[in-house]
Amino acid sequence: MNTAEMWLKAIQDGHVYETVPKNENDFILYYQKDKGLFDEDNYPCGPETWNYFDDLMKDQWKQSNNVLTKSEAEAKFNIKIIGD
Image (tube, helix red, strand yellow):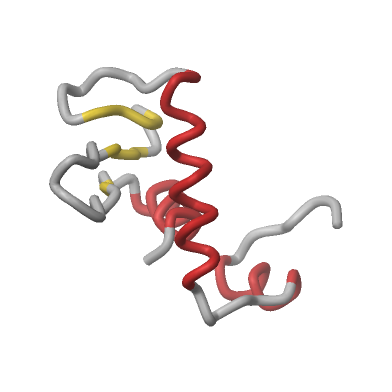
């Protein structure tokens, strides 16, 4: 599951999802609908971690072979995408 899918699932089911570190030096971030983005100490993550989260998404999207069109994504996740 990539980061965007994790975020959508967390919004739908309320479960906690975590990032998978690539090596032992990477830190793990967690996301839950009610808490938002937080670290393993249950501390809310602020702007200093958002770049890491963006990099994680970019890396995971590069690896994905399952690119959806706008209409496919709307149908698959039962959402409405606004904009281009």
